[in-house]
Length: 178
Image (cartoon, rainbow, N blue to C red; front, top):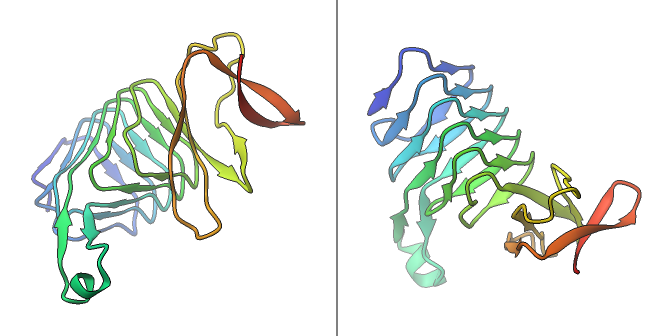
């Protein structure tokens, strides 16, 4: 089914992919139940990476012009997921994205931009950042937050070193310049 797959990959049923031939799975990759890989482009998942239940990877990008979109015009962009990455359940990863080694993607996140190695991509609910991992001891850690607009589209904002979370409510954090 796959272009390349290690002997020790574990995939829980149900699983869906468009082609399979465009997907490469490294050693000890784990795909939990309900994962979908629409691999019209190349998808590479590195060793020791785990995908939670219902993670979706979409390589296809449809045209933004409605007339051209109606004609079925689309392109396929690759997805590269590094080694030892954890992607929480229900996350959606769009084409053209690279997720670096050791990165974390929170459950329900919509990933539209690259996630640097070791970074945490999480989601925002009603404009309030909710980091998957909080580490006030080391504000140099890069954090990637995803605001969800009222239209339901995903856009990234990167909280760079020099920013650290400051509490706005119990368990809820907002990035503020220091």
